[in-house]
Amino acid sequence: MANFVNRERELAALDRAAGRQSGLVIVSGRRRVGKTALLDRFAHDRRSVFLPGTRAPVAEALRRLEERLRVTAAPVAGDLLDLGSLRTWDAALGYLLARARDEPLLVVLDEFPYLCEADPSLPSTLQARWDHRGDAQLSLVLAGSHVGLMEQLVAADAPLFGRADAHLRLSPFSWRDAGLLAGGDDPAAWLEAYVTVGGMPRYLRLWDARHDAVTNLGDLLDGPGAPLGDEGTVVLQELTPGSAAARVLELVALGADTFTAVRERAGLAPATASDALALLERLGLLDRLTPVGEDPRRTKRVRYQIRDPFLRLWLGLVLPNRDAFELGRGTGVLAASREQLAASQQQAFASVVRDWLGDRQQAACGPWWGAGEGVVEALALRGHTPAAAATARWATGVDAAAEVEGLRRVLAGGPHANPEELLVAARDGQGVVTAAELYART
Image (cartoon, rainbow, N blue to C red; front, side, top):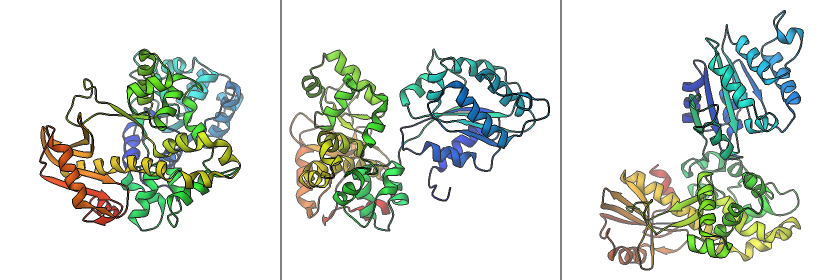
């Protein structure tokens, strides 16, 4: 509990939906994003039962629920648990509702898809009980890391459709909050942590702000038992191994950033490639980038990138060199792959600069590119008027004046020439916006 930071808005959303009255809440988010920590914090100081998520037969899951329930709400003389045990989910839900008649009770079912895997009828059973709960003061939180399955729970044809009081989709920490976990007091170190491993709380907690990215990655990935050595396989559990989606994700990590490149390198039919890309986007694994100011549904200028920096590195560097990392030779791979690492950091840094510039200008902000060469990493538009543009360079010794001239040339032939403000963000250099300035303006 002492290590819990941030998530004030998420806690407030939980409190609104299930803190003051009976409520049903769906909480979804990738593994390592901090769902369990958030729900543990929410349940703190409440009359609550927290059932951790594990794959287990129905009888075993109910035994664990009963064990925790006896601690929180001791059986009443003559009730079901006093005379016997919970044999079915229908009986368990009925008992929970009965125990919430006189005072509030919060029940958290973590990794709910595992429970449904053991008993596919559970959502229907829950719907029937929930629809007839009367004035029971029961609050129920269903959490899960399989984002696709959690979305299916509340789909239009699902038993729980329309029953949830809130669906909280938990995201990784923003770059603005990286310093809460990455340690130290140097904004440059916080930003390096974020652009290298992203915003997953676990990854940021493991980062050592005293060392550079290559040293940190070596500690995290290299050798038997490395803390994050197998992390990519954990993240990818939603994807069937060898499936079109799994192959497409790997290819994007290796540099195939357009539909044509993905389709040709994967050897897929256009419809199959399109479906795989759409699935990866829905799961939050892939970003579909289009030039700001264009209709994203109609433009043909589309590029793809892995959303999470750590997953991008794991797929692009660790997976192709798995044997070397398992044998403790990954540090050499990292040292020889500095350009690939820098390219991944550059992608993440560009996203940071877009977020910063959009907030600074209070305007829509995204990348822009035209038919010619060159990309503007961040262009802020107010309507169709260009308010500001910025170049993002994850590099040192950057000359802002030269970069601004390049920025002008790229914009000159397009519809958004001559923004009111032209900026250059970089690790350091003459006239650039540095990490300290980015954080100072958040």
